[in-house]
Length: 111
Image (cartoon, rainbow, N blue to C red; front, side, top):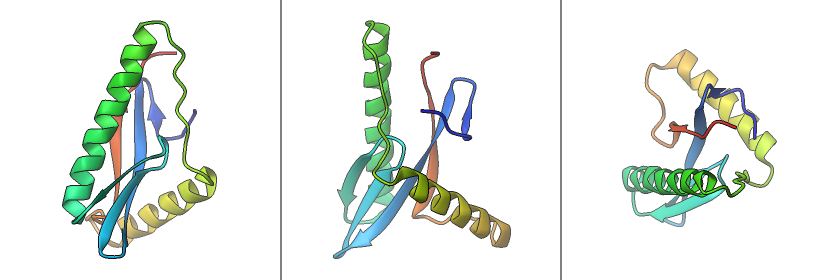
């Protein structure tokens, strides 16, 4: 998967946390993985941990000769555009990134 947030062998993953029924759901748009927690910070920590585990497993599989494919969330392009626009608007009016949106940098194997 190609993304403008990719540089060299680094990939910047877009993550969103939303509240649903008093619980928080964190989703990585590029990997289509989610976690559910009781607070924004707990959700972010769990999502980062899940992403680290996911990408480490992908690196291990690829080093063993298996083909690795990352599958983004449904309607990825629309969600990606909204994420990028919202982040750009918020960063132009504030120096702080909102707690419910973040990017996670991971190192991906060379292709």
